[in-house]
Amino acid sequence: MSVASSRPLRLASLLAAAILAASACGPGAPALSDPKEILTKAVEALQAAKTVHLAVAVDGQFVLDILGTGGGSMALAGTSLEGDLDIEAGKAKLTFAVPALLGLTGELISVDGASYVKTNITGELYQKSEAGAALPIDPTNPDALLNELNTWLEKPEIAPRKLDDVDCGGKKCYQVSIELNGAELAALSSPDPASFDPNSLITLTFKVEKDPVRLVELAASISMGEQGSLTIVLTLSDWDQGVTIEAPPDDQIGEGSGLPF
Image (cartoon, rainbow, N blue to C red; front, side, top):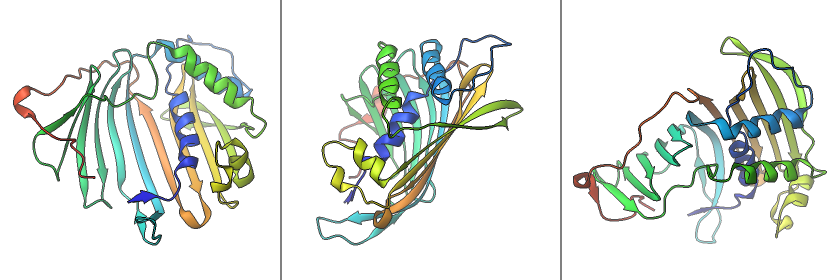
């Protein structure tokens, strides 16, 4: 089974990845008013980030294309991803749940270019793959991410707006919103803009802590017309608290891909 179209999600993923950052700014840093600068400052701070805890919750429904026959839908309520990223070392340890896929739950460990996955369907042993799970940033080349973000923000279809500041966990946060309609999504798409439903709409709302400047939450509302809609809420916490992520011992590793599809 495959989702009919996933291109709008790549836009949400780009921005989500782009602001996985922590700031080296000290107390009393000047307030920011330009929404592009808020996002750029968060990415610049990426070079100082070492570790972070993330949690992702997904809800909504997708229409599926089953072997080219169309029909069917997947309810995404309860879909989640949570765990720790060691950005500096390029490691990750995450648990995930996709109730709509036979009640799937599991764990992913990514260490030293290899990934280890175990699920409630495939059994108690981890399955090793030499293709490590890619982190949303390349710790060896953070400037590339900043350049990509700046290029993206300069596109005429992208028009971030600064909303009113809000309270977030006892601190103050900037809010930045980006909305993209079907025509704008088609203009940004390559190579097949015609694949976008004209009724598509993506709204991204970022909450960025003011001092130090770092992401607290990204909420994405994605509507794809007849293909369905979903919401994704990403939260980041425990910046630079330090984590220990290691490969599982040999006696806990079996053979196979680890995923039941």
